[in-house]
Length: 297
Length: 294
Image 1 (tube, helix red, strand yellow):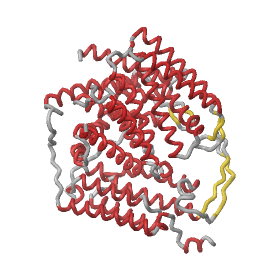
Image 2 (cartoon, one colour):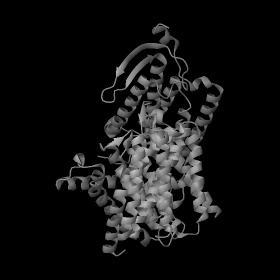
Image 3 (cartoon, chains in turn cyan, purple):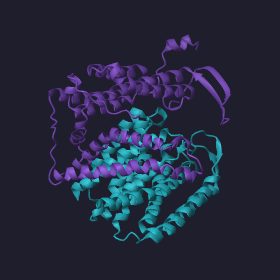
Image 4 (cartoon, one colour):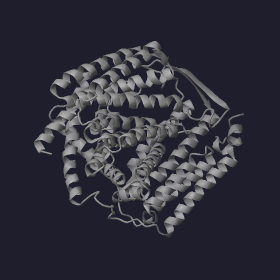
């Protein structure tokens, strides 16, 4: 156990070092790491991951064998390359939060290959993608992408994928309603990027509609396959927790107010990511299962 | 298209150094240079970075594309800093000698109104920022050209990462050019079938759904290919026992000297920065203020 703790600590330290290097090599000056808040939030994220890990360490979902090593690499490289492509593609966007179809990748890799693969795919892939694009590195957002892969991977802790799905659906519904309520309480806030007063009220309704579609989709997809229903719910939860973490971290890192962080960052980023993941991940999962059946492995 | 990692064997003093020692040096210089906003100091770091670049015997022809891409970014960020002063106000300088006021300017499309104050401090801050970015770039740009990609894994391992994660990092970096090429081929294939990613039509959900013909084949193809890699690795008993690496890295005298220099550089930089806090702020030469009429 002690060795494993040390291993994970070393992984964390190297991860932070990589973020520093990448940030310094590519980041615009204003977006670079400054102060120690980003380290504190990286550590908070690490504590959350360790808590989940140590509570379920005996489960084989955490094992890292040959398969996991290769899929970690493939996932991170794919996410990096496709993120680079998506970043350069003029997709419809709100604020500076672009529509990222590639968000389906950490969700998919986490759901299929486990939490470690999912986290690595999201976190390292996001660093590679930003590195290739020449954008700065945002540690909280790298970890957020890691969470988007880690949380769906936690389904492997359950032998029965149907188990807990109803409870999880309720959790997602409650989180969506809370997020929408926060936006509606104070919809007009200064845009985080421009400083102009902007009405983000539309995002509350989009959030509610998106949440309703996710939940309706869960019941519809369940008729076809429990797995397709589960990937949507787990993926949505991963995105809400991941983006929520990054947005709340920005309250201290970028000095945003709570409402600016939630309304200006969380809502657009989480909303668009959920939409992308909800549509593309089931297609990807169905294609993967079909290939798996055909290949017999 | 993506820039592939372009390594070529060159018999230079830089390439003979252990990659771990070079990474330690790079980290030490990065953590040192970011402590200063004094142009004189950052110019010193730029000289150090360029010395490494030239000792690696890299030519303009080799690195032209990377320089151009990075320069576009650096110059864009410098102009932005020059116009807005972002990142410097109240951190690197606390008073401004305003040279001129531009505006209010009305931005097309968004309709924002901007008033830009050009000051001596803002200009020197932007210049220092550019020098600092080029100092870091000159150091980092040599890495993909002079570190053998087959050493990435053993280097990460040597820096303390567990074997499996070191290998995953190694593979991830190596897969980037391959997957970039596969993605390009898939994009061309779909275009040949009439798929136009630039002209996706329909509502937002329809547009996202129409990206599937691009994302799904690339991902599934990579996963199918990964099975062969897994088989090959399993056949070689990957992860069964304590891992050995084909290439062995061993510190030589020159590496130890570089590590010692790196530690010294960082320690001295930090000590100087603590002793002279003014070096963490923008240095405005008196002759510039006199020339500007202040």
